[in-house]
Length: 76
Image 1: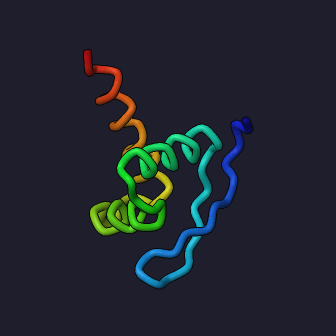
Image 2: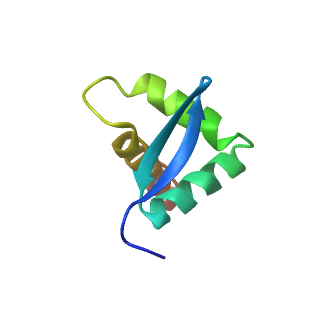
Image 3: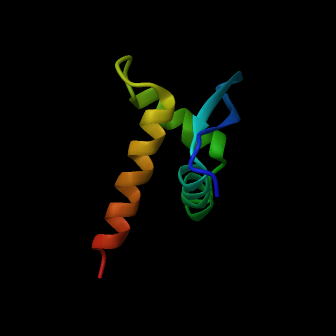
């Protein structure tokens, strides 16, 4: 796995965009989407809608992933 961000293409509500994420974040983001039985694009669109204008999409995805990993580690 690379520690350098890699570009990943997404389609959010019909609009093509890309985010640069490290492999670890991308793989975990895809796993979360799969576990929720959701498409990566749909989950990214939801994050995009809730992120506000002060934070970039890649950063919002990283925080989302970190929050989910923390929640999972706190479960017994």
